[in-house]
Amino acid sequence: MQKQLTAIIEREGDGYVSLCPEIDIASQGDTIEEARENLREALELFFETASPEEIRARVHEEVYVTRLEVAIG
Image (cartoon, rainbow, N blue to C red):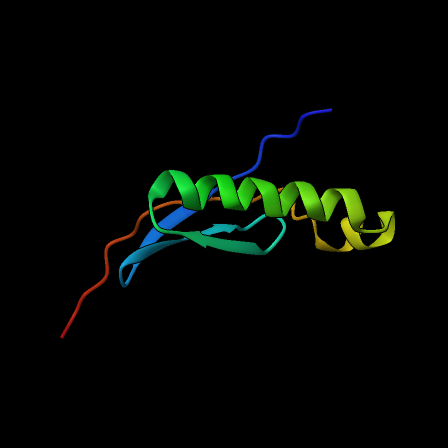
């Protein structure tokens, strides 16, 4: 079975941090591609090992990623 999830990747120092907000799992890598693949691996491991109760408790079905403008100073 396949499930579509969100991956947010941002530069942090010399590498990249990846986050899946639906499950609140993060990973990292030296490149965007590596951070993305490491997150995929972490998510697959979570789904393989977590109990059904833990999965239900952690999965957020509705996640919205958007940009907004804020006043600074």
